[in-house]
Length: 392
Image 1 (cartoon, helix red, strand yellow):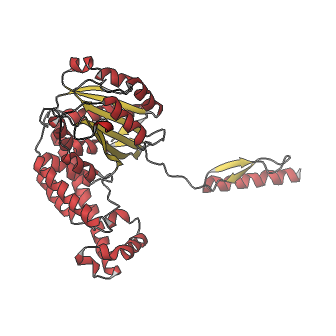
Image 2 (spheres, one colour; image 1 turned 180 degrees about the vertical axis):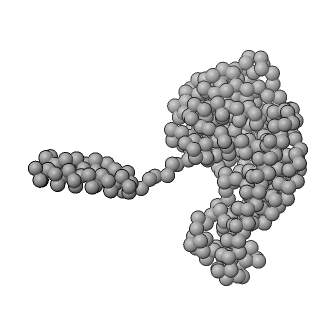
Image 3 (cartoon, one colour; image 1 turned 30 degrees about the vertical axis):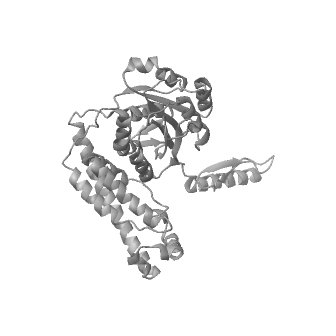
């Protein structure tokens, strides 16, 4: 009797302890002994963010100048819309790949197609390549370019990852010798959704099999006027955001073999985007204020996770720093960089606050939707809903 009482008291004490100090699991320590609670000391694993992968396949044949213009002017607002995507309450990562097809400047043996950028988070690089695109008449092999993207891009395999191809063009979807049925079947096996964007009227797109292509690819069929000019809405907050963007640029500390070139590229894209419109430049500035805009390969602040890592990076790359830094001591450089990091956080917060006010203002203006951007955002949202994404 006393022995059983002691066992009961011991078990009660352990249960009481674990209820206050962590999660518990039950374990039988002996066949004849009562079950007692054991402390689960396993660390809680952080939720890994899902990734939205978008492969953009653009027809760059002679009639597609309007499509290219829409792509390069609407990229930044498209990315901005994607930054609101969350899966399991965690903001999703974004990767974009870029292809061109239907351009006779590319050899026929390559099916007139070219992978310009593989999946990348380098948004400046993607924008730079969009600005560099030119059109040239040719045969548009939709099946071939979808096949190449399906086989040669590094698609993720997480259950919550969103994998999407967007192909835009205006000729027959069935050109070329590649079997559309086989291509779409291969994409489906990798859980890749193929969305088709026809540049022209809806019935012509159906006749040229673009709608059937989206059906086989389990995606959306959208029709756009590729020659329509992008809608711009000027807001009272634009000038403030652009001034803050100038301040934001001053917080970057380039390093490494590509640091100087990447810093120049950043300024170049700012200049090119500003030449398109104030609105496009503002949208770019807003994206630069968010975590999706990362430049760890050339910026010390993005690269360094903590002060120790920052110091190691400075020591290893001191001679690649800008002229005003390389002659300073490691401690001085570290101090300057940490101050810039603090400044950047404040500037980004200010831009995001102004962005919220700007979004509200735009909603009151009843502005029209932009063709390419809207087609892509709506298709992503529809597919994301099936994987329990939220937008906030």
